[in-house]
Length: 448
Image (cartoon, rainbow, N blue to C red; front, side, top):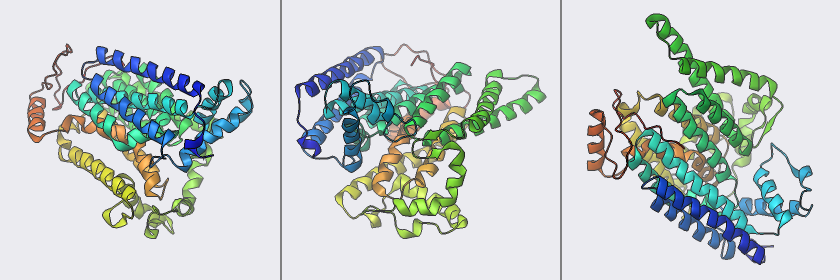
């Protein structure tokens, strides 16, 4: 049955209205508690509701085709087992975990595709909020509001939250982990690090790529702890939070890999088989190069050396593609414009790198961004799927560049204040001024 032909029932209306009312109350409360957040969050909510209604009653959105519909169909199929009887369908390493959760709702009520989409809308609004919060931790409230507006109106983020895909389930957990990771770097409180890794593991259950993000973080933190130990040997002063954090995550990573080598994660399979899968990159790339949006054949490697050489090219195709010469339809043109936006943010960060490079929190997020970009670059050979994948970590890029976005005059005025160790003014906020000797303000440690 076509998605738009599924009967719209009173139960679907009640469930959808209930979910959206909770989201609206949360948005209004956030607007009261954090000045400047209200209007971008309301705009995000309205845009996602409109997109969801189009998907439900008119026609599939660009990312709302076969994959999205199959997730909803699977939820309804499993729901036939009855309320409370879906245990046999649960699989931790499956791509349909979120479908299983919604199937439990269906089994105890009725089929309600728009309610499914409403849950995704709620997670999409949470994603916008978390992007703003990360930007506020890195920069200030003014940058946070700019980041919120970008995330609220960015097309792929709207679509991902309006269709029954798992993308927003990943990004919500992933960005919460990133927020707590930034707070650990800034405060050295071990609780933030433990919470961040725990939430990132939850994101890995939705999509296994988060495992590689955790691995990248572990490598950086171990390097920092070694550097801190050597520095402390010379100066006689040690920052215990940094040293302990690196040792904790490094040890936990090694033990986790040894103990959980048979644990399955969505899209990457068993943890212990990850390295073996690198030997079949050519086969995986060839299998995913299908349809009218397939990558050109020269991006499929025939040996390990070619795979190494093609990695930066495939990463460029993932982040900034499709290039103009690969545009074959209006949808591809939208993807190209999105890719140009990614390119603009990357160039913005590159141009002003001397202003943020000394900041550990910035450098750590850049490592996470690069690791995920490389992993997803080999995870697809299709421009449509690439647009979906790169949106999973777009929030990091927006948050990093939020303090530099805007008019040139505003940007230079901000950089002048940063050079003087003062934050940009934020109307109506009572937060204390921020200072730093690294050319950027010390970020405020507001509660999440």
